[in-house]
Structure formats: C-alpha cells, structure tokens
Image 1: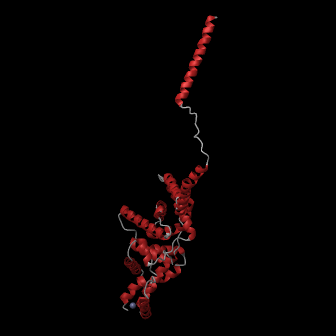
Image 2 (image 1 turned 180 degrees about the horizontal axis):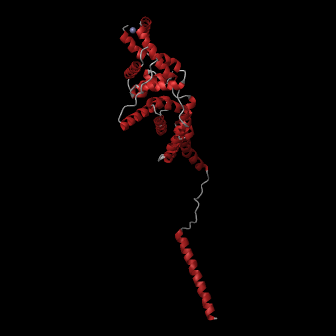
Image 3 (image 1 turned 90 degrees about the vertical axis):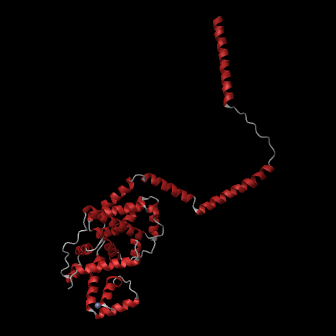
Length: 165
Length: 188
Ligand SMILES: [Zn+2]
C-alpha cells in the first residue's frame, strides 16, 4: 500500500471503522512499517479522542421556560389542541376493532327489527290504533276566544243588572 | 455507538404518543432527555452560547409543531439530529449573511506542543477549548459531519441519512475535515 492511499484511509474509513477486512489488514501492515503514516494516525486519533471525550452541557433552565411559552402562546395552539383531541377521540371510537364491534351491533339491531319484531307483532292480539284527542293550537285559540266571549256576555249581564238597579 | 436503526424505546414510545396528543408534560420529558444532545451539537456547530440557546429553542419548538408528522416507530434521535443540524446550519448561514464574513476562525489556535495535548485533555475545560479550536478550522458541512461522527458516534450511513447526502459525500467531508485539522496541528 502506498503512503497516499494509506493516509486517505487513515483520515476516513480506518479511523471510523468503516474499512473492509482486506484493506484493514493491508493498512495495519503498512502502519507497522511506515513511521510517517503512523504519526498521522496518532495525530488523528488524538483529535478524535478530544472530540469524543467532550461532554454535552445541559442548557440553562430558562431555555425550557422560553420553549414552553412559545409553544403555549403560539396562535392557534388552543384550537389545534381541541382539534387534536377531537381527532384523537374520533380515532379512538372508530378504531378498526371498534368499527367491527359497531358493525356487529348494527347488524344485530337490523336482524332483530327484521325478524323478531314482525314475529312479536304477529302473536299480539289485534288492537285498534289508539285515538288521541288532539288539541291543536288553532282549536285551543278558538276555545279561549269563546271563553272570552262568554266572559264578555256575563260581564255585560252584570253591568246591565247594575244599571237596572 | 449509537444505533439509529433502533426505534424509540418502549417507554419512550408512550411518551411520544402522549406528546403527540398534546401533553406538554410528556413533551418536557422528551426535552429533558435530548436537550443536552441538541445543545452540544449547537455549541459545536456555532461556537456561541447565545446562538446555541436559541437553536435549542427553535429545535424543540419546531419539533413540537411537527410532532404530528413524526412516524411512530421511527427513531426520535435521528429526527432530532436532523432538526438540530439543519437549524444550526441555518443559524450559521444567517449569522454569516448578517455579519458578512466567515465564521470566526480560532485565533492562533494553540497547537504548539502536541505532546502536552494528552495532559491538558484531563481537564474538561481544556478539552472544550481544543474542541472549539479544532472545529473552528472547518466549514459548517464538514463540522456537522465530524460532530456526528466523532462526537455522536454515528456511522457513515446514519450521517448520510441525517444530512440527506450520499455516503461518499460524508466520507469526503470527513477526510477533508481531518486533513484540515492535521494541517494546523504541527508535526512533533
Ligand atoms: Zn506510509
């Protein structure tokens, strides 16, 4: 293996453990015999170690408070939350297994209405349809007008009696 | 080693579902778990505490907004990596266009005594300074690749998926990033 290829691989696939077995063995062999490439490898490994050992700091607490504020105060947040809830409810109540259950219930009701009800009706003694005494608005209005008229007549009689006295 | 192929963990799946249903407490749990990772990426990408705090905000606000687009069973981590890197790259572009210049390079990065690097590395503060110096040598695309690879431990394939580029692009960027760093680290 030539130094140029060795160095290229050192900077990428080798250090990143992405090298295939054949190349890996070749490069290992080269590194053992070439001090210049070994120097490069050592230098790269050191910088990689530095990058790896650095730790992730936790962002200050006010960052979360600002995020929360931005989420909650965003226009449409409340409306979105309501629609989200509604669609969640919709999904919950019309989920596939529930749809099946609803279908079965509906089928049972249809079957009951189609078979059981006519059968029940057949065995029941015949009855005349009940007659309801309907008082529609118009008739009740006439009645109240009549009573008013009656009141008027009575009132007139009383007035006349008083007048004759 | 990270494994992005892994879907969200069982407990996390419920939390994500609750957050998707609008539960802000569940979303806070997601924040508590991943804010360090997002902040770390932002800090390494921008080298600015102020910008990074804003990036963390933007990442989680847009994550919350697009939670409903999140495919259940896919990796929350990959998704957050993608939003974090893209938000950081956008922030860098914005900063550059405002300031009208390249990202500040490390001023006289102190690599004079490479043999002292090991000793210094024992102090995390020193490490952070070195990390800043190293990453400041790179362009934003190279920096994103190196952070995802060296810091977050993603494979080439995973980086390619996060950045939406092909594997060879990832390989080339990493190679150039490291070559650039080595050029600035004087040989002993
Ligand atoms: Zn060589």
